[in-house]
Amino acid sequence: MQYQLKVVFVDNQELECEHTEKHGFSDDLELFEITTAEEIIVIPLKQIKYISCDSKIFKK
Image (cartoon, rainbow, N blue to C red; front, top):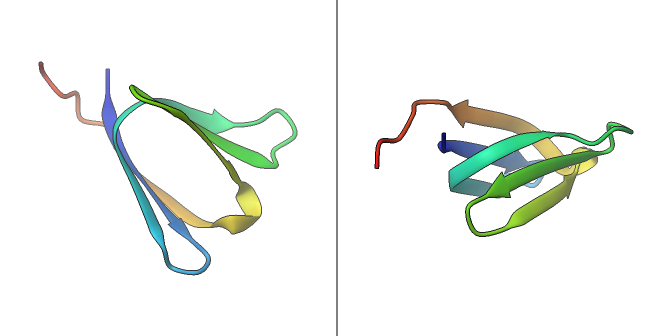
């Protein structure tokens, strides 16, 4: 399953990941990890204002 994930940073910049495969928090709750079909993105939680997720299943 792939879904769309949007991260808005405290400086109001946005990151949109169209083909997210999974996301979650690190064990120490200091990092937010996003795995897409192309890359792995790690963001410090202090830089994130909010996260939005559209979990509809995209059919191939």
